[in-house]
Length: 349
Image 1 (tube, rainbow, N blue to C red):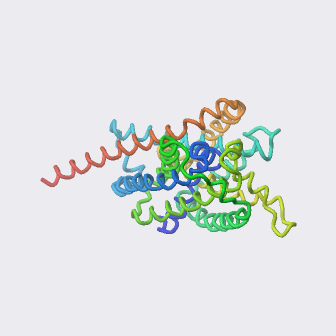
Image 2: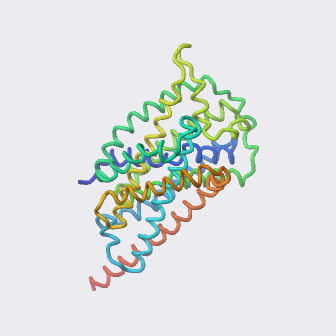
Image 3: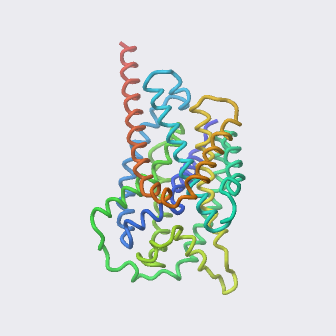
């Protein structure tokens, strides 16, 4: 059963925000500083172009992606290999972001594989239930997450100072462009998880616009609260702001509750990616996914998070890696679409 248009919009909204806990936000604010809002608007426009290409390629897929790439031709094998690498890299990065967050703020003396194992187990369990189950869960988490986003926006408003945005446009054009490119790539790359869930460009634009608005507001209240210099000192700047919230002078320390919206985004993204790994590898046993992803989590926890230099290097380069994935996957899908049309024309003659 195909997921509904609303479920499609809500699921894409969640996954398109999944790379912005810590890494994505720090990268954009580090490049754009107080003028990040300019780069984000330009990035949104670039992202619309990427989204248009995505929609055209998505609608050309006949049936499921599994059946579309089932024939063992060199092009199909290359596409399947690239998609598998993309899914693994996305999960690797989400493990890194989530694991570092848990290690930094909650369980600094607990191994990452232990602290993140329950979260990963639930994500894989949901992924094994199929896309429809993931979409139904995303539908629930969407409304809870939106409620938390609205609460965060109003709760942080008193800390915003307009002077933190002045003077306007003081960074280089290169930094503006890089800010825009990072935003466009990080918000559109996760859409590849839902390639076979065909929908109109209008619906894709709805989810993407909602992503843009929520991230635009969040980035601006971070800069407005801390200023461009101070904000670069935090790995998770939004979480730091949430610690300041004080409702009615007695409701405090609710940052963990309000940060759940980011956890929802990552949870749905990992669930979808784990499901896609199972599909692209053509195995039926769900326990294989558990083995693959727990090995990946072990590598992240023991060899990456423990080495600060490796983590920083990954944060500085992961946008470029996702850009390469977008270029190559889109190019190969475009070639396959052209070859399919040529074959159909020849058959009709």
